[in-house]
Length: 481
Image (cartoon, rainbow, N blue to C red; front, side, top):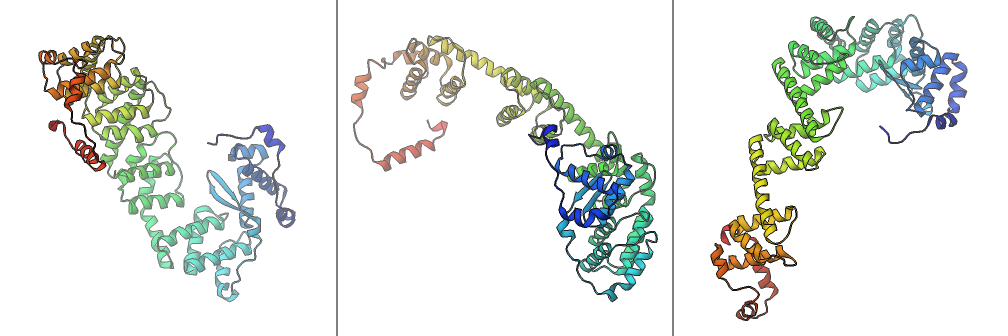
């Protein structure tokens, strides 16, 4: 959806350009309704925000749908438009300059028999030179036999009636050509293949609730599902049952395409997959509720967040608990929650119980850190930096809480108590202090400052020596310290 659009007043005050070639070469030979359809369609091309459904077009022009389709069929024969789809109606306006280019010259004697038989298939109207030329170009490109092409034309007429237009016929021919159809025998084999589908087709039509016969596109889809993708009829019918709302061959094709991409082939696999998708949707609803967000569609969320989280091994209760934790800590987006989920994954906390235990330990740890802060003469909330320092003091340096609390008492009312605690504990570690009694026995850092300075040998280090020392520190493990 575009971020900006013209106002209705602006659109009314602008212009729709009509090529002079149309006015000079085509307009004199069009009837009133054909002109109305072409010009109004041109206007819709310039203003895509306008409602351009076939119903709106009929209402606006006061014409029947068949009249509009007939007008566009005429312009398609003239090479001015291309009918991409009739249901829903989709028209592409073509360059007029290209339509005026002289057609490629073909030797008449090569096409005499083909022309005669092709015209006989359309007794109610005369074929135009442009139509013949389109058939010639396709047959030259595809190397398809003339008899094969005529059989395809007859098949399309039987399917759509004598009003069928050459773009539809050539589309069928191109699709069959891609399947290797070149000769009359190939066409017979293709038609026989369609005939064997008749019973299957009736079952599929019933499953999607459609009355009447199948279109050629429907037969081609069924052939793709069974031959190319390898689906059995019962699996196709199961897929049809999973569709919601208005069912159609296109929707069924999209659903089977989804199953094919997920390597879901059997009826049972489809049932399990749908149950799993519904489960993921329910999980997404619960996560959103606890996170405090709302989305109308869950497809993107399930694909980008829910599936990767469950693939990591998180259970449902764990994800809901993380969402609630994010909400109370003011993290209100799925992306923000994703960062928290990844942190729990790095910690190996995947179940609701393990996450609850971790949060309990964190709360107890924060309570201990709070005591240290208060012993240093301060009163404030625990920060992430405090947690990092505490981890260094306890895990890396190995001090018990009582030693840390003693160091905090010594730093009370210092301007910067935390750096002072770091200095004291660093001195304790160097001196091998592990208890409060040993810490009390040490001289005051302030009183001993002059003596400590005198004990060190003063010397200058080269750049190579310093680099070697830094590198060796980087390679140390906690057990080496």
